Amino acid sequence: MRVTTTSSIVAALCAAGPASAGTLLVTASVGSRAASVEFVASGTNLVVTLTNTSAADALVPVDILTGVFFDIAGAPVLTRSSAVVAMGSTVHFGPTDPGGVVGGEWAFKGALVGAPWGADFGISSAGLGLFGPGDRFPGSDLQPPPSPDGLQYGITTAGDNPATGNAAVTGGGALIQNAVVFTVSGLPLGFDPMLAISGISFQYGTALSEPNIVPGPAGLALLAAAGLGWTRRRRA
Image (spheres, rainbow, N blue to C red):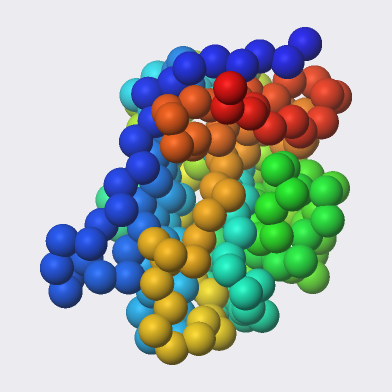
């Protein structure tokens, strides 16, 4: 069963002056799920901040934000630099490397085949049939099995009570409350995320058959459900 639902989605293109130049912020919410992703160009680096902004308690694995997919114009070849827990965030049920590094639990890959909506690029803490150990950011494999795999080090909700929910979200694996900051390098000079990044979607859970939220230009979101693949909603 495919569910198509209207959501309160805001796409904020931050271009209000020099401090905001080279920044794209996109937020989306469907029901109790809410997320944001910020792309910032800094020289040849692309800094991506992925946040689970939901105020709801996370009770099951599909409440956990595990990835973001997107397209980049020109499909540049990018190199994984770092993945760190964002300032003010907390890691439950597991350690980090020094400095809040969680790169060994997150992956980045380009030239994807089979990603939601045909996206070329993705960042994920779950394998999803797309990412493997060779796609990880620098860092230790903090929890077995070799990552990316399973729910561990996914991003739980801002309103999560880590003592409530099923076993997977109450100690079955580490979870990060709030946000993770990723850096990849190799952008061309003058890169502008507002002009070059599109096709963004937010992935939840540990399988592509689980919820994927698409920020649409008209404030629409599509919630993909078990085994039905990916379809685009056409405007009338």
